[in-house]
Length: 151
Ligand code: ZN
Image (cartoon, rainbow, N blue to C red):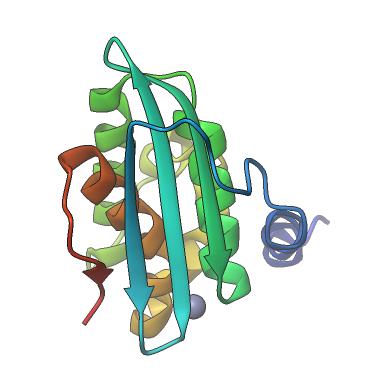
């Protein structure tokens, strides 16, 4: 039998060791900084928008495996898509990891590769690691000048 937990672990480790779309993006149209002081995660997210589409996205991160893996998966999922689509994916992910109680199979499937991160639901501190890149991406799109912080 496939051990789902270790399979998820492998995906997270792969993304944290070989993050996709890592590095500053030049030129970019939007950027923001995020900070999770409880864990020590820091991230800068760069977005290049073209006609409402996320033409390209990059990030620089120093942090735990969860935060880096979440950032890496985020770039893969929203690159080339629309801004509203990116916000919708974040909303679904945020809802599933922060909501108390059961989540459905359909909700897990809808998360695509982010489903590998749903284990953080059981660890409130880890939820901040997993959602920091997404909050930072949303702040970049919104043109927020102040650093995003989880505290
Ligand atoms: Zn962390």
